Image (cartoon, rainbow, N blue to C red):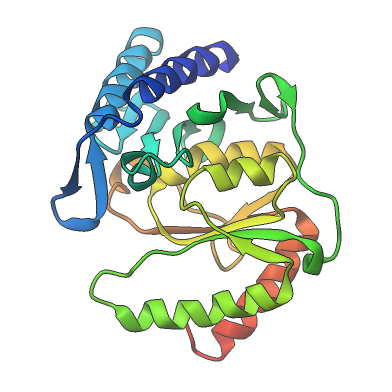
Length: 272
């Protein structure tokens, strides 16, 4: 099935809502997770995306960060993050995006994201390549990690300050092994990998809606997309995974291999 037009239309509409709201929003901390924020723009984009899916694909399931679960007992599940990088958005930083991805059973088959501040729409379908504003994009093909810019998302662990300190030890090893480390804490970093600007993107503390759209797109752009330790990501029974913690390592094959060597050494030391 061709999802390209649907992704372009829906993400274009989401981007316009975000731009209209940008710089003029109120935000609140989410109940149960003071590290996460929500704005009225999150809810407006969520409602729009859900309505578009229900109109176009009425039998499909939906898992939305803000609105929750819509279970139609389908093999297809749309996974939505209305605004990825809400903290950035709420503080008027342009480094945020809108994400929507589609799973068939446990496999990502379509997805995309918008970077509203940059007027960029990224889309991909399995086996059809990755595109930015309908132009093909590819990851870097360099071999030496030392020359690469790497994105690493890190957040303060709830009630686990020691884990955060240990993770910073790994971050130091990656910094020493690459050209430089950058972070937006959002899908902006995935876009930079897809366009060949960054050589990788890693995150240890995220959710299923942070993964599905960018997973498929980065693979179609030529990256390997695994969990943080190099294993396949488990998307089986996605509607049961709303509260599960996910993690990922996404990079072109040569960089992915070198990053996994660093992570493996860190893990053997018992630091994780």
